[in-house]
Length: 67
Image 1: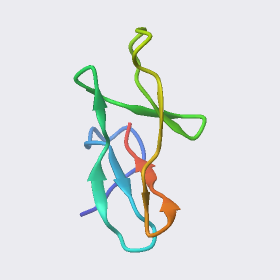
Image 2 (image 1 turned 135 degrees about the horizontal axis):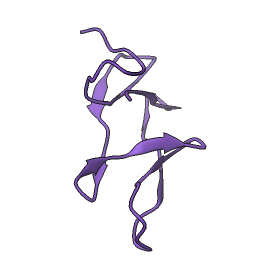
Image 3 (image 1 turned 90 degrees about the horizontal axis):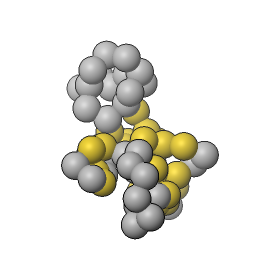
Image 4 (image 1 turned 30 degrees about the vertical axis):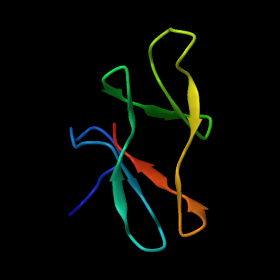
């Protein structure tokens, strides 16, 4: 499966550079989260949402591929 970084409409994924494992980007408020400043971020404006750490696999932070 080919994963591109932006603009092709594919579902955002988190990918491990070491083992190649792929995971769906977590959702919050029924939408995929985005990456900002090295964290996953919910785009809503409620106080209960916000930044979450990007998951790790094989001891390193997974890489985000998506829109």
